[in-house]
Image 1 (spheres, rainbow, N blue to C red):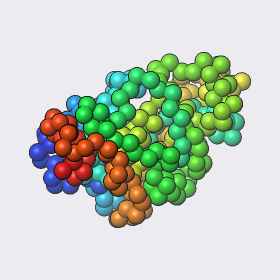
Image 2: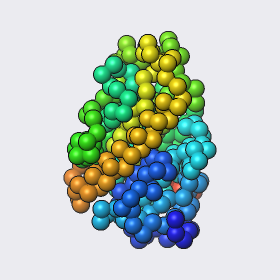
Image 3: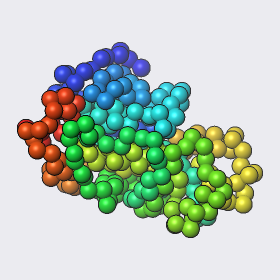
Length: 300
């Protein structure tokens, strides 16, 4: 993949990427990615899931990260989400596109369809989902948890790539690693959730605190267990859909990166402007150091 580099917080002043992508290994081996190199980023929140792969795609600087690590070694609850988002921020990323597999909770959301959710429902309970605490209190707005402008670009990219896409919807995020019980699946449907997954809501919360634009590409692999034909779906079927979705995701990412506006006009980049409520004179020095890559400009 090219030479491996070590990047520390002291060496992140130079912007090396502008668009970040979370997903599997297949994304950063896609055709058209040029000058790919690996960067090991040390963050104040620990180690990311894997090395970031930096390169140029469609003339834009991108950073790819496998959220589960290469070889899919990390369970959803074990992911160091804070390190993953902080690493993106430290290399200069402003927008994050998150690609991941989901199950469908609606008959009309078919396997191999993509959905661009604009809402989340959080059913996780084991995760650290904020950069703050330990001496610093902050409260960001999260009523609209994804970036509408980035979502519009990604939705249009799906259409340009020939993928059947659904714009908007509710992604219910469960802790896992087990899938839902039948009772839970029926409740999720009664609550009118659209797709189910195990990762994206935590990413979205931290992206907002890091002032990053965030949008998900939810790739439907199968119906959740509520569906009468669910028991006839084999693991081989799901894996086959994963591979087909990965190829579609590559095409979507290329189209999205190509069409991405140079400047952000949304409010994501100002999410912390009025969020930190702690008296600045009372913020511990350790907290200032820890939060420097995320909120340093607001702590003086």
